[in-house]
Image (cartoon, rainbow, N blue to C red; front, side):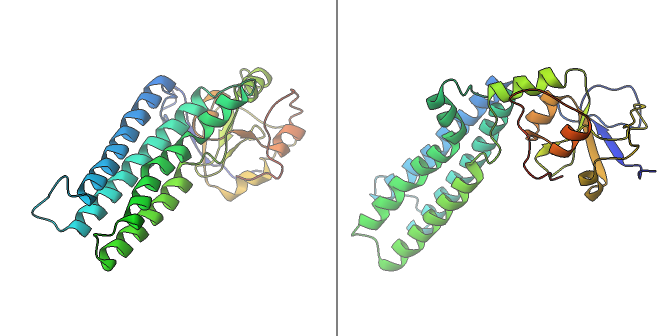
Length: 252
């Protein structure tokens, strides 16, 4: 018999021992929040540039400290904004029928990361008034921030509107399951709470690596960043549907 797991519900549920996960939310709200935070990130970059050219003066901090503060704030606003944008893309993904929009929507965070740091890095490198120590430290800090911000802003698991729709049609009314850190959702799960069993009486073997599962709809799974259907579950539960995004090798 499969080992009983802790299962958390992603939808409203009356069972008292099942914890509700966060609702899907509204894509427009997330996009607006992302844009506001990105604007704040760009403002921090502009302030750093104004400081660099002596247009503003902060008396209680030296130039290097001020530059570092603006770079750090720039990075924080950028990363949070990018997470909101990626969340919105999973709730309401772009269509592959418009390849330009699809590429832009899924790389917007990376584009903003370049805008937030590259101009500052160029101006720091070409500035002849800064002392060598200040220039070196500031350039390194901005370059590291660019790398971190760019890496954090990339959506490594994008999904298209067509792929999401295909999954919803194929799995309409079917509960799916996912682990906290994986990017895959599963259907081949024994859930004693919901009275759901599989034909062979076993969980998907890739779920044995995690003691905690979340249950919800396909829409909720994709909104949580779980954009792929487990290929093992697809085979064993005989799920058919053209255009469903699956993993090549199953992961939790």
